[in-house]
Image (cartoon, rainbow, N blue to C red; front, side, top):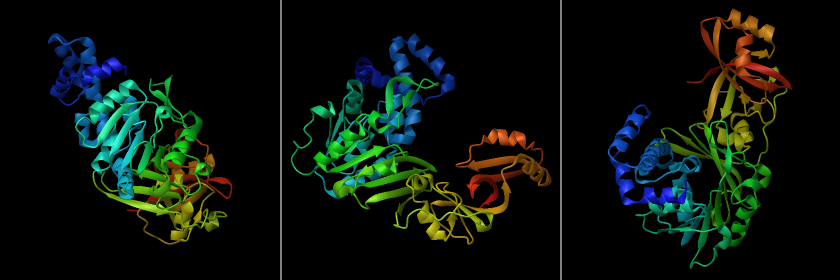
Length: 409
């Protein structure tokens, strides 16, 4: 978004028009736009407010009900922290007793909103003028929150009185580069973030009490000594890895937090490294127990599968596969359990015969570390039966293996 459009949307007339619109409906958007232009509104303004209306529907999952009082951009919505996680991040800063937190690269201001709601004074900063304008609008009625347009390099982070902390959410999008669907392309390279990983660490050396939100693919080897890297799981998806320094660290090393239950409530569970290292690995089919356990993806990304293996007294099917097998049924709240029904080498002819004998007509396929196209496997097996079966594809003793499983209730 250009600064002029941002300023126009933040103006009273555009805001009143946006607030007057009904909830966005793609099927009626064209007719609504025609009606607004017919009422004398400039086409560019109509396009802008309709875009905002559509973004609100997408942004509600990130910002909750507050989204109806915000101005948004597509990239800003996609990068924004879910409000549930933003609240947990803010709680760390509040509990640390900091007098001010710099929100560096504040984007649309979602994290600043959470910090202010937690009672933390926050100074939100973004180098992009249009984004800073939108953040200023989104934080317009929030006590204890300021917004400025500035570059990280031009700030004196130690100028404020009292104990100061910082929050960074480096941009992972590359302006000017788009994917096949026209979205700004993403990067996971630490030296291509904005600010870069080196700059994030410099801020941590300067301010000390710092949190930085990074991609869930953050390399384990990059976790700084004494810091905590916490992977977050929500709805079965690994959303982020947050690195914490200073008094914001609760458990040095790698940890995970997993949300279970409804999105607007539910429970957060923490998984800590027990120091036991990686999971032992099954030597073959004879080592498979009756049960197969699949940890939440945040736990898997954090490299804590070994913790699960020790909880259930089991083994991993292959190093890094993330599937743990054990003989006993053990309830672990951040794990999905399956009963193993049968085991098969991943070979087309024997599997085709098995599928025919078992009257299988549909496969739900889960896989890791097995380079096979699930759709091609379904075609190759000539499925024509009436039963639907869940299977897991995983290496076992170095050989691709299919496990027929039944999800635990």
